[in-house]
Length: 239
Length: 131
Image (tube, rainbow over all chains, first blue to last red; front, side):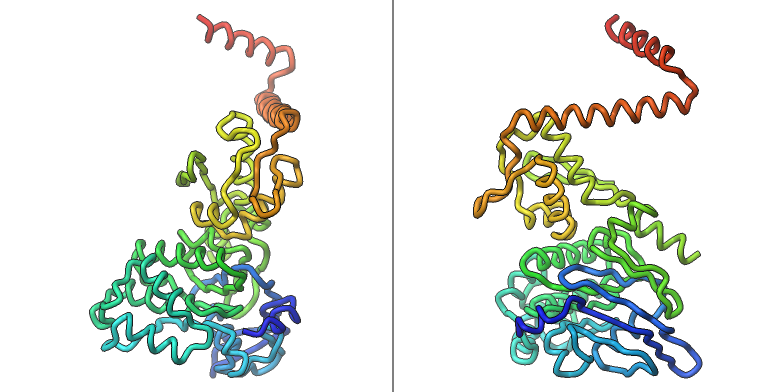
């Protein structure tokens, strides 16, 4: 990790009038956003609101039709990606691997991955190291995927729907794990979810998207003072 | 809303209100009630964030607020401590009392009671309690 990269920019993510269309569907429409560094940000909205598209644009996996975007002060590219731990939606790991194999692989291939941190996380998350991925529940595999991301010492983490389709216990373990990491070092976290529940206290900042457009963005406690819980805001914004 | 314990401290966090404010309020009330002693060390930002399952930034915001108001003091390298000044704590107690009275009077006014009537109701209530 290059410290210089960290100090040059004040925003972890900046979008200016970003639009992206897939065929007939407008995935993002004129999205302008500035997301602060060093805090955790909830990217909130129902399915199809543009959350995954935003993340794919930030990772340079797809290009905007128009507009500008910067991640960690730079144009998205594979060079910038080494500073980002990205968990795609519905990510899976190779079935034949054990947790230990996965960590060995991650150590060789993912910049900033620390095996010691990962081993500690596996303990917190209650995932046995000898367990095979093929024998895992969906929640256990999700926990493994989160660990592989979180064990990287990078300035930005992007987690796409890490809680969806996972049992309550796994959700709680993941939230504990994320808070644990946030209190160990400075990191910016972007986490998308279409349902808040127990993830509500995980966010310092909330961004509400709908059909590719920005509805509202702000400090979570300021929003609570004005509108009540984020979960309540979600219910009233999208119905 | 669930209750979380951190050492001898108990916290209830309600997501419909700013979280940092609730942390401040719960420290204030614990100090005024004497549940935390003057000069006592309070958990680090990290410990409290992990115990309450809230972000470290939220706890930091609460701690900054408590320091600004004089409820706590940070000693470099040692951590954060409740003020050792009895005067500070008395001031806080009076301030919380003033807020409680204002809220009570507001409610009574909303119900249509005047000053004299409120005063009489309090006296009646006190007499009933002492029976």
